[in-house]
Length: 233
Image (cartoon, rainbow, N blue to C red; front, top):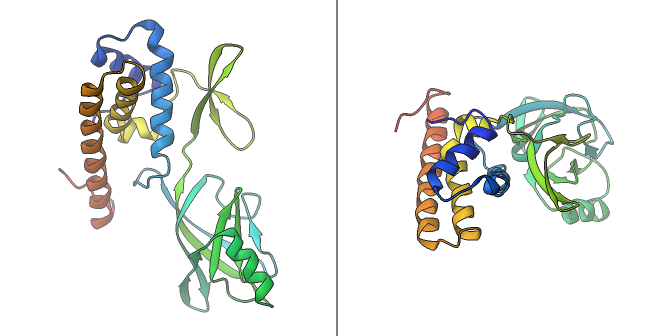
């Protein structure tokens, strides 16, 4: 699969493919790439998934990255289990309202049955009555590129927990290594649709993006079926 080594490489390739793009369009191209990265960041592939086991503490309902072994790169939980004796029991996703209502209507503590990921915290119901091990598979946050307008200029940066780092053309990402065609196609669709007002090429770019996404999903499924042995399409 083709790979753009960094943001600047992808910008230059999109300019070549679009033809009409001028140097003054570079920021618009970067904005489209950032939007594409943010659009797909919650989709689970082999290169952005993780698994972790961490301890639950009796009478503690909420957990976050400050707790022992809790991941600091969690973007979205895929599956969640708690160990009770020798069995791993599923813990089901619920809303924060459900979690709060549960604690109001159900007295006492117990083995957690439900969770909610809200405001960078994991909330459990019921509250653990003992020390347990919790395990979940999750989508990693590989870094969240963003941009904003500052005194008429567009400022690109990468969001993280503590501070924002400048986003330069040297920026690299696993998305560029493994999903370059999909990200590039989505960015071109955005540009054709919103900058160049070219519906015909927007439709073509959308088709390329869908095909690239489906190929990536097949590759992901192939990794799953063969324990990380690539599935060739």
